[in-house]
Image (cartoon, rainbow, N blue to C red; front, side, top):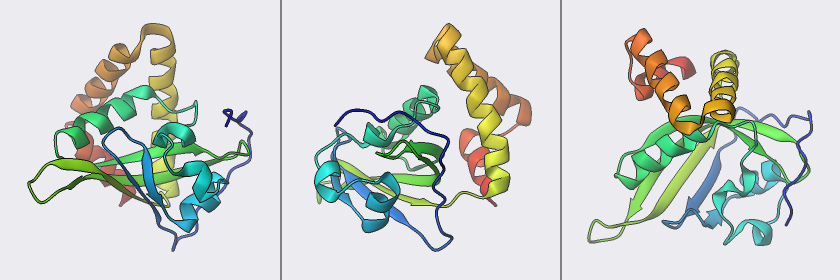
Length: 169
């Protein structure tokens, strides 16, 4: 499946929607619910076994996914705002919670993600931040983007988690 050309068409999650997916430790989709398929404009067959980044929108700064992987691979949950790309080029925003899944011996065997509709007020904060981070990444790389994000958080006197959760309230 080729990567679709992004369009300005936005899909908006309903208040009652929950997008659910599970992946293996490499990020390949092992489960997806109907709402995920609807929002991504893909069938279960098109999603299962594919890397979760099949829905990654090019407007997303890579530093967000760097943090996500650092958190979940170390056994911590993470919350993040993500702009996703549908198969038809439309986009949709989610407020994601990603957690590790464990076997009976305490080993991470995959990841579980639940996404809900982000608050409009949160997106008013996130959109310009992501634009800035993406611009920095394009010009100076992901490490520079990471440093900028950490600098912004430090200036606000909050951790990443505190910041992300606070703007969704």
